[in-house]
Amino acid sequence: MNTIQALAGMLLLVAAAYLFSTNRRAVNWRTVLIGLAIQNGLFLLINYVPAVHHGVSAFGAGFAKVLSFAGDGAGFIFGDLAKPSGKLGFLFAFTVLPVIIFFSAFSALLYHFGILQRVVAGLAWAMKRSMGISGPESVVAAANIFLGQTEAPLLVRPYIRHMTRSELACIMIAGMSTLSGGVLAAYVAFLGGSDTAEQARFATYLLTASCMNAAGAVVFCKIMFPETSPEALSSSKLQSSREKSEGNFVSAVVTGALDGMKMAAAVATILLAIVALIALANFLVKDGLGELLGVNAAIQASTHSMFDGLTLQYLVGQVFRVFAFLMGIGWSETLGVGSLLGQKIVLNEFIAYMDLAKMKAAGTLSAPTVMISTFALASFSNLSSVGICVAGIGALAPERQQELAAIGMRALAASILAGFMTATASGLWLSLF
Image 1 (cartoon, one colour):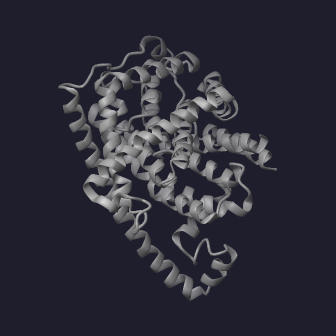
Image 2 (image 1 turned 30 degrees about the vertical axis):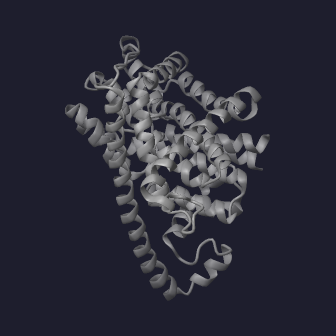
Image 3 (image 1 turned 90 degrees about the horizontal axis):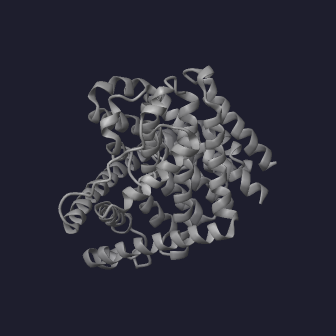
């Protein structure tokens, strides 16, 4: 049954993208099919080919080990407050936020020595050759596996003003379909907790999802924004900035750490505001409307206390549970996963991953469902990202800002579909093997 659900889900996701395509006749189905094959192939290779699985698992373990060093730095500043297993338990501000700062500094060091640029160039070359997309598109899609939605476009800054509409959309969609290294590291920290084996497992999940989403971004871009200027593909060379950062490696580390501090402060500020507003909304909806209608007790009983009444999480769960079902998840678990999907799109993925961590700890979701959910949430595809992309990319090419704003919501839809396809592919193969 789960296999049929997932297959139907894949077909419906492609059909939805085709329905909202800007030019259905121009869709290059070769690119679409190759992209879908890459998405599915990556999952199969990483999970079911022993040599690849062991290699990626070792990389995930190494990634988790590198992140553990953030605890040494945090422990020096905050002492026992930075220990997840300490008397006070898991404290987000002292455990997760330092990971963002550390990983930002570490990434800056990799960039300074040209390592990150070489990895991006290799992946971009592979995407260009296999999927038949332009050089700038492949560079940005590959870079977004590691960089944020406003940092990756910097690699192709000179090309943005001359890009076709399809290429411009691809930059936006790739940015919203993936995660940056800094936040990915943070999710590994609180999904894995203090268990290094769990951290390695979730690092593998998130890295796999980000790679699959990069291919998925191209797939849904080329369905919803098909290329109508074939000459763009032949005229745009695969070229990006490979220059090292200015100054010495110490300067690079300092700059990276300060950038990470800004990101950590922004994350903390946004989460504080959103969590408080959710509490306010739940007070009005649950304690107001829920009590008035007398449905809180019934909801709590029917969901086995997953929800304590008519809450915002319960409402978005009901709206999005059908998407969870089409990912191959059993109906009994779709309400919880639907709630995560809804929170991720309406609010952001940080909030959704925090709730996933709670559900995982409580044993509310099965292990395969936790894996599928981790894949489904692994992107920046939420409403606020549209504004971030329009402002960030628009600053690099002000004359294209109006066009970016015009395609923003359709690009968001494409990025959501790309992430859902990654989760659906994982659901399909988990149901078969």
